[in-house]
Image (cartoon, rainbow, N blue to C red; front, top):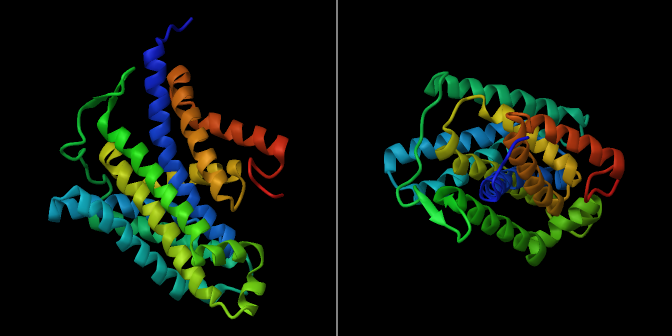
Length: 290
């Protein structure tokens, strides 16, 4: 019988919360894009990877983590906007699987570009000064940087929620997820809204990669692993549901952390089992509409 102290269990739960914040941001970006545009973005993991590589490279040039953390997602978000305008937009109105195939192809293109530029082994990173070491939460000692990840994730997701629910553009986004044609009949340029939302979703993926890079480092294939788990989060939460992505992201992070505590590296298997159970009981995920 494995004996695990309460403190160690709490530590693992907080690690799951920090991991869950990354999943929640990744999945919320996917959900925004799918909910409004009905585009299954298989390149989402590559933008996560590009965010990680961009912040590490910018830090090597600038040296300021905070500036780079802001600039990296903006750069990748702009790249996402350009891809939407030049590649995905011309495919609207064609076969539904065409954007899917395009993003799947982009996934491999981005990985090969990074391999050419930075090599097969990736580049290392380090936790920024001031966020290294531990912090006393009163009941456990917890890494400062992981605490920062939790706080940063909560702030970013709250700001995105405000954008969706409290702004005029957000109102258009919510209306567009229900009936795009009606929004266009009202004289609103829905294509421009699609472009902005696509850029926002990509920026969230890039920010996720930028935040995780100091802990995991970077490898060209890191996005391929993450996008599968992000899609699991989206399915568990309900396709197109922003709230579902947040709840499911935290849930998946906790399941991975706690499962790995008892059964080694079985966390990935556990989330697929969780997905199967939820789909069998709810049919459309926790917040899905069916």
